Image (cartoon, rainbow over all chains, first blue to last red; front, side, top):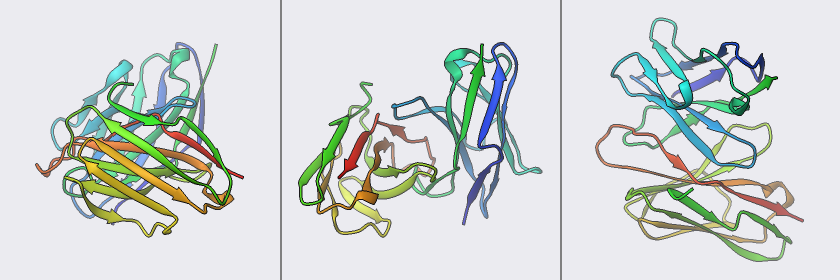
Length: 114
Length: 115
């Protein structure tokens, strides 16, 4: 069975400063990992995905994440926060065939202070 | 939001009503999903359809009844719901079959309120 833990339920940063959203996972098999973002009253949007290729994954809107097997982590980062980044972010793990059996974290709400 | 669309975006219904949620994907995918998102809880997978066949039912009460007439359309029929069923219902789709997860693409959701 797989699980994912988002270490912070709420992160607050100032505009222009770096963003770090932390995620740890557990999985019996080689996982695929994703980050999704959800803006208020909107559905989830795929930010980036790791599927056993390069361990540093670049996504949309300047976000990237690094897969660290030794630390079972997949933290999301961005060098400089923008007001439009304020949203809820979900770390997701999948070990099923195809895209089934996604396990979602509880989410991290990112606030950006002007 | 042309990839996966959902209608209606908001729905208020009484416990004795019957209503349906609709989802349509324009991505050429073969798998579709219903999720429930409640406040302060992780996203819960409800149903999975692959090539129109239901492959997963995550112990969902029978008052929720899915229908997948083709790979592009997915419905969720609702009847005699309870107030605790109030939530955001999200539809998603994905490619299938290769064994490599490409990720799922989500619609904007239907905000359901049961009175």
